[in-house]
Image 1 (cartoon, rainbow, N blue to C red):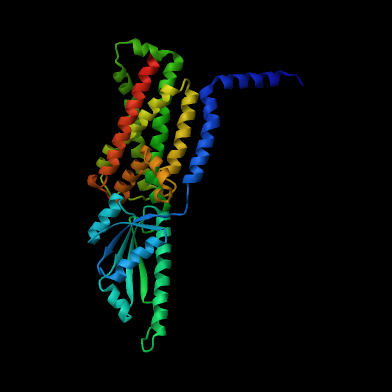
Image 2: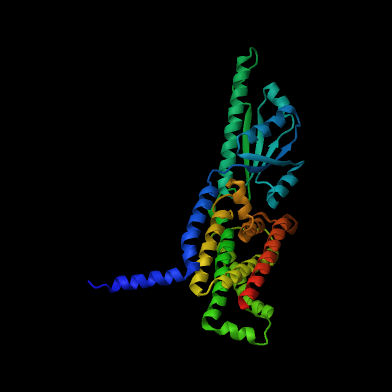
Length: 375
């Protein structure tokens, strides 16, 4: 056996050492992602945002939400005054669960009559449904059993049935089908992957071939060059959206409850944000391979932290702050809200504002970096 394979291996190591960007991604990014994802990913859904509709307004009815909060699985974020406000809160994403306490709740418990409390749950995320209903049902069952035992212990007060019962009501996805949750989310994931990667590689390809400098010295302005580069990918993004929605509707039977024109209009901001990310990556990468590596490294936190696979409410607060900086986090709420809940523009203004701010920041960073790169 000759030394030739070892010589080739040494040459590859030398070349890799000279490629500082790739070397940094190979060493630093896996460590950072391990620490981030190991801390952030949590399949135990806790701190579920909850609103309360208390029709009794008694001391006993006010105690029930506090007992739910004490479990650590529910966070009461507000009180509503009607079922219409419950639907509005769930449709806008302000809350994922609503607790409905009926009138005469305390008097019925005191007199021994059976009482039913309702738990209205946003069914677009099956993990939240399971965690919310199981925890609330266990708490209500334990509370009902304690009341029953106390009643039986008192002489002359009959009672053989549990006086308190939880009735779950699952909205938007009553059958808890995974496809209803996954297919709309795939629109955002696929757009993120293709828009970022294609834009980053397109600029890097021009640089590798030496044609980018030719375009720069031509009469075409820098802004015109960038707009011309991204217009085809905007059209590609819309074609991808249309294909996924069509296949999801007719193959996976995913309902489309909201306005498709509204969805396509809001999707423009999301597509533009991802194109700006790809443009920013292109100013860092020297080759198409580096641009592709950056795109794949960026895709992983989007899938794990955006709420596509794991519920947003289950993540610790610092991880939620990081995920709020990802365009996919806000677009998932938009696409699932419109497609599954029939959300309107006023329900999604907060997410649109987030996306717009992210877009402006990305365009600023990309343009500054691009000018610096040209100089």
